[in-house]
Image 1 (cartoon, helix red, strand yellow):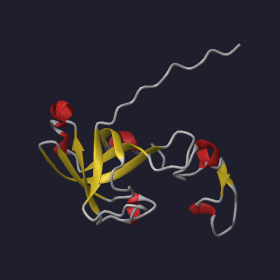
Image 2: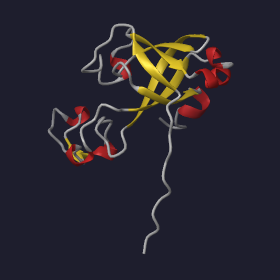
Image 3: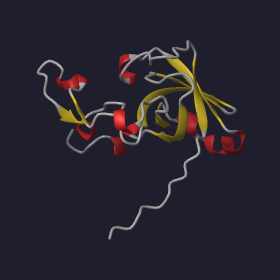
Image 4: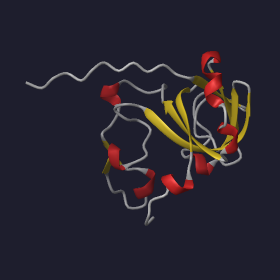
Amino acid sequence: MTASPPALVCTPIGVVALDDPHPATPPASQAADAPDVTATVTVRDDLVPGLLGLDRYPWVWLVTWLHDQPPPAERPLQMVPRATAATGEVQGVFASRFPLRPNPIGLHLVRLLAVTGPVVAFAGVDLVDGTPVLDIKPWFADCDLPADP
């Protein structure tokens, strides 16, 4: 008998607001494809002290909940991702950056523009307006690049 995993409780720390909202689709499928598209995350008031020092980093990771998803049964586990579109090669969702996932967690490397009170401004947007943000983490060149890329 396999034990059930513990229930997960995750509360967003803030919400994305696009400077030019695109309610139905993100402006790009990857943040690098929209380097000049800007947005903000407004962090909950009780978490603003956690932003101290974030402004010293030029790049940050946003961990998001890709909330605008079809029901789990309609999320494919295999597809032809953008990386193999030319050949038509099918890959599993875990071998892709496809946004429809069993747990729709997004990871976005964005360029930090400013931190002003509870508002974190950034560029390089592949999100829709209203996307919940679960966490913000600084990007470190010495930690986030493989030893032999």
